[in-house]
Image 1 (tube, rainbow, N blue to C red):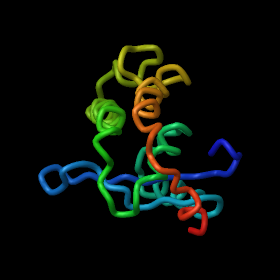
Image 2: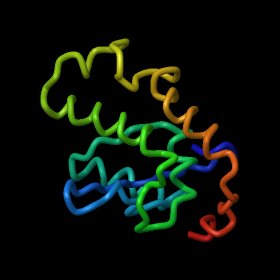
Image 3: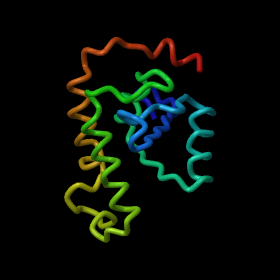
Length: 130
């Protein structure tokens, strides 16, 4: 949810070798956000809930690559998902290093990215029409 209480969602895609960085392939507010999450769950994709990460990614244009300022935060999330998919028992255990579980852990990287992205122009007005 955004700071204004509106539901929001962003979907990322990454093709190793084809993409320089993950791309924003869907994003939206309200019912559109609900549809993005529902579609991800129906297709078996992992849904990670981090309002701060979503807020930052909502500023990325549709079909654009994640900006370098967010590489570390997104890379940590993707690395954790990879370990989880590979059956790493440490990836699924609460409180283990590197696992984005709980507010403190899951927001650690997004807080760092948010600090670095503070000077980005506010583009929410353009996206709210979506």
